[in-house]
Image 1 (cartoon, helix red, strand yellow):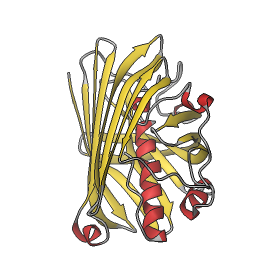
Image 2 (cartoon, rainbow, N blue to C red):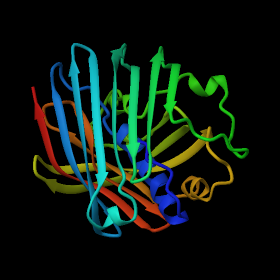
Image 3 (cartoon, one colour):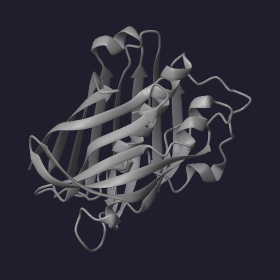
Image 4 (spheres, one colour):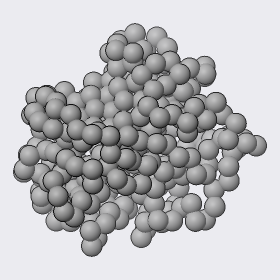
Length: 276
């Protein structure tokens, strides 16, 4: 879920952190649910241990097609700084063990502005993008090349990723991957590596999770001189915890944590729900 560009350096970095969190959501499901299954997950968002909002994800698979929707909003004291909220959706297909997105849309709003991005995708290449209102062109923005828009997944389409071919779901294989993402404006990689296992508990799930360390690697479309981008590119304190959801064949994010300039931002699952 792409967040708006916030004004102060600290809040800009929190927004950048939320973008990485949103992308981490996107890479968290590591297998396709059974035909007709719907997964819903509710999350609590906190900053330095204080509750600041909620998020939710719903993913549905039906006869090789998928649809994913997500939303998030800040609440409570966080609204005094920036009343941010956002929603994203995407659709596509599973083709020969790979994800083939067809469309992606996201809207992010604050107390002062709203921006919507719509993107169409064919054969994992961008076919068209509409951004309203458009971003201002900045001289330090790294230009997007044609190749930056090929062999990609959008942040929502990346929610459906083939599972490891062999071995248990909670294992190093769950994490060892690089996800190439284009969000309509910037192209970046999320490089995951295995960080261990933990035991967790929430309504709907109790058991082991795979802990994945995440590195944000900007490729194109970003502003090279922006402090928040530099901070996130050097950030070694980003993790996503992946939990298998029984009966669905998926791994979903149990917890995501991102160090920002204003403290650690965390999104942690409070409930899993699956229906067939």
